[in-house]
Length: 91
Image 1 (tube, rainbow, N blue to C red):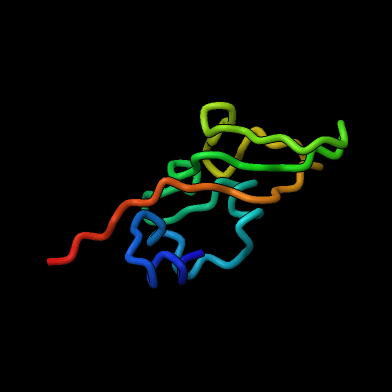
Image 2: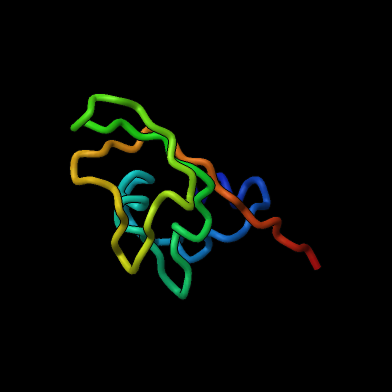
């Protein structure tokens, strides 16, 4: 994801450079560093709820993002995410 942002001149995710893991893991734990958290840029998440055996789409306001914690259930499986990126400003 970081490489995609860099190649497409999209900002906001710079705090995740060097943070190991997957996008699903980053969502689940609200990963971040250097004052940013991935939850601040989430527009929506599509996930599989194992408990109900259903696929759901949650908008950011339906997800609780706290320091290294979210409201996702332990058996939720992230399928995709949509983000609000910031355009990088060239000097």
